[in-house]
Image (cartoon, rainbow, N blue to C red; front, side):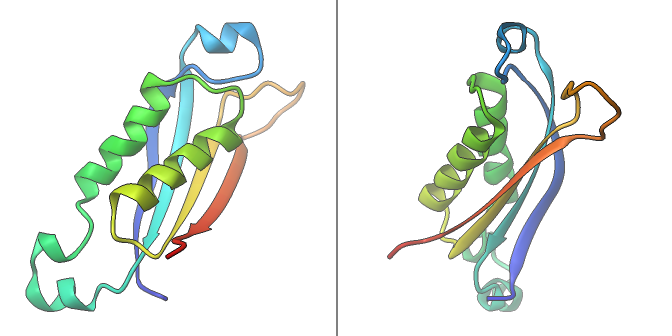
Length: 121
């Protein structure tokens, strides 16, 4: 499937991390999602009901990042992927979670995890 909907570089504040202070002090997280499905019908009908409502997908990601607390960005990505597959008629999702404020002892743009999950019929 080559059709996809992409929401790129969504930015949120969250309390996720291994260290105790990270669970109490909000820090930035960035998330990209790719939703793969056949978009021909939506391209023909021009009807929101024939595609994925981007606003609802954004809200799902925001809720996971901003209202929950996890130790690993791997878990954040997995929860988002599971939620997207459950909530929307998509065949596959790709989720990337970046933690730009990660402190590893030297210069670093971000730590990132990418997961790809398919719908199991």
